[in-house]
Amino acid sequence: MATVLGGIALGGIALGCLAVGWEAPAGAASVRVVPGDTLTAIAHRYGTTVAALASANGITNPNHIVIGTTLVLPDPGAARVGPASGTVTVAPGDTLTAIAHRYGTTVAALASANGITNPNHIVIGSKLTVPAPGAGATMAPVAYVVQQGPSGLPPLLLAHPDRLQLRPIFQRWAAAFGVPANLLEALCWWESGWQTNVVSATGAIGIGQLEPSTVLRMQVRLGNPALDPRAASDNIEMSAALLHDLLVLTGGNQQMALAGYYQGLASVTRQGMFPATRHYVAGIMAYVPHFS
Image 1 (cartoon, one colour):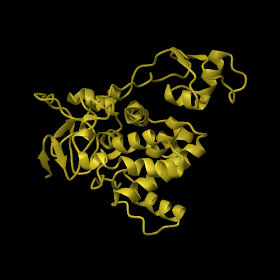
Image 2 (cartoon, helix red, strand yellow):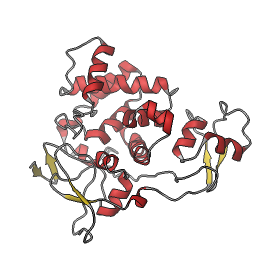
Image 3 (spheres, helix red, strand yellow):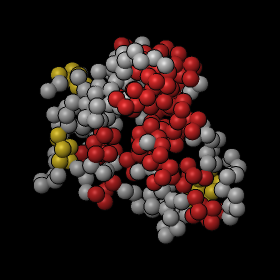
């Protein structure tokens, strides 16, 4: 069992914070939080989403759950949001494929709904109609509201000066690999809360929650077999390199790159974003402005 100090589980933290006074419904399926768990990992493991878990458990802060607590697993249907139609404004870096993934629809359905004849060309600032139910849309976009401290940074980060001191390291490696520092910081914040000692149930290590296979790949890619995922700077360096490679492969599309980091880019390309992936991406993107 991890020691809990000031509401933070030392020796392993998960994403999410339980509301005081919440009680589990009788007879509900449940899972006990173990060291290394994250709310994202639990959602992925049980085929649900961060939002559905949060709703089922009265979680108000997706950055902290305490080891040893028991979470109710929502009904399978709670993991999906009902279909919705509407419009979306094309942002820099958007592609029709990325928009289709984000809104749970297809490129063909988007193209048909908007009279698009060339799916490789959409104009920044233009408004696209998101297809109505039956035209390929299955899920509405995801939105997160993020708590921020006086400086704009997450309050939990401000409460830990040792983690706050990692910012120059993030900026160093972000610059070295040409990736946005705030995107790298938000990604690693969502993954681990910038903790070097976090190891997930699948063996993902440290600040960027790098799988052992990913570590080996990055050691080869960077020509340095001595890189240690348990060392803050080395972990951030490998995370930055991986993010750089994903941004290159997705043509600079940040949301697709994040989805690839979590789900695997081959899987995202082949199957689209899983519901848990969509919430993962939305959560990180909500944090990006707070690290600017």
